[in-house]
Length: 544
Image 1 (tube, rainbow, N blue to C red):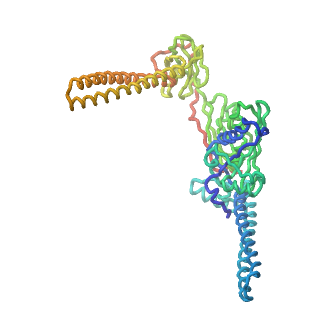
Image 2 (tube, rainbow, N blue to C red):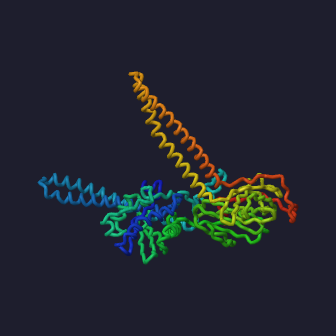
Image 3 (cartoon, one colour):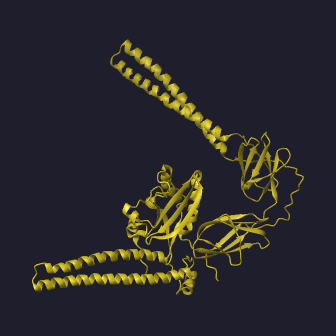
């Protein structure tokens, strides 16, 4: 059974170190050497998983065995030195013989441990090679079988070739759980190189599984970034990536590099997809996988494992899209049921005074007379936009329950620059809030003075103390009313700001009793009723 150190029992940690540059005296490249690794790690995201294969588990086990072997060898060396030094001590012949026998016994124990250690490594290597060959040949599956009957079926079917523990998944996390934290090796480790034992030991102590190194080369406003990713233990380079771009597009460079690193970091294994689209009459079917169009052949489609998106389009049918987490080294059956588009319409009465362009679900709609527009419906909620000649826009929506063939709805949008309007209302709100806070200062002062002089008057009732209390009482009443007025003003401006903030929300189109007399008659008698969109993903393996 493969041994896995507790260091990697839960998470698979990725880290990066400072990137070198071709201009050591450039402060910009020096700062970029710290920021670029963080940008790349941040672009990787925090939802990735690593498929840990038998050969990688063996490298972990091998490192542990080598570390223990080194410790045993140092102990053996010390015991040999102790035994050799016995003759220098003033022991009798009998005592010396006893001491030498005891030393030989300890030496034999250490040598036996070394022999067992080497044998264990040889056994683990042979087992790892066997298991890795099974994985490479595709005779491995970590599929969770849901029903009890299927469990028995797969148990007997794959009793001699399946091993559910060959590949395990570990969550990818970042060094110190912070993309801005870079790994800094010692000067000795740097001088000996990334393949040295010293360097590997420091990476191991930092609990890093993969370390990203890089070099930035800059000429003018452009730069190239060369990235190497190393797997530890073993110091094995698993990826090399280069990207060229402008200094003004660092995010684009980082995203591109991260995208190229993902397959190596996740150790993603191939996935086979068998895709069937119905009805068969659908013409010009296009299948997009991760926004790239794919050609569907008889042998299916081979893609990388992980969370992926796919979309299906066909002439005269509604497009369908979804995402799914595909496990590596599996075959999936994807059955897609397309639904025909309906040539049905609703009519939208635009109550704006100016001439505008109207869009529905991202598509321009047909303009009719008298501010009416005709919107094609497919039994779904409609989210649209109204744009005037000045570029000012507003959004509207029609709930699915209001989408009925031939009805007329009306919408009124107050088209204006919402950003400027919201900013104006926010400034007024902050101004009223500041006035309220400032008004509280004299209010508290006058109230305090009034209370103090009132207490003084009750202690010593004189005309002078009475006049002072009366004066501060008047001031207290005035400041109280001023604060009250500022509070009302602030409440009023707060409400106006909230109303302004809500102007960016889509306006709901209202139903009417108007019947639009269109010259184009709507014929829905020949429309074929179809079931709802259906994408069924069968995670059971497809028989060869």
